[in-house]
Length: 199
Image (cartoon, rainbow, N blue to C red; front, top):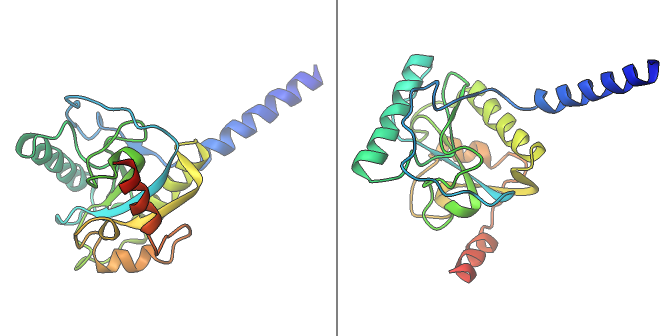
């Protein structure tokens, strides 16, 4: 009996320790998002995390962040004819993570790289806006969770949006920050060369 109890406690501890690394994500239903028109499943694990910014106002309250996320989805679906919001996840200045296409579905965040990457977009314009520590920590926790849950390879590469396509995203301030993160890849030629070979 004591052995069975010990095994049960051990399993509970393991389950709690895995989930403890995963931050809470505000679901699409919670931010009142629209259902996607179509989905394409993302082959996982992926080995590239692309950091970008939304070039919208920043937000610091739940209501303001949710409003911006809804507006982004509306513009992308109604004006740009996307199937869904383009980003995999969005990070608010309130330190909350908002579900976009999530871990399971292909996003529309970086042309040519969507089917082999996760796109994490910080709400704001980080050429001008100041970075919020709680937003940075949320992104790091999300990436760590992605590795632990098998969505990202343990040796994933982290890159800025502008390293792969012609854009200022993720903005100077955010780009300067992510260059100090583990897994940041300065020379993206291996990613670009793989993209050319696969086309």
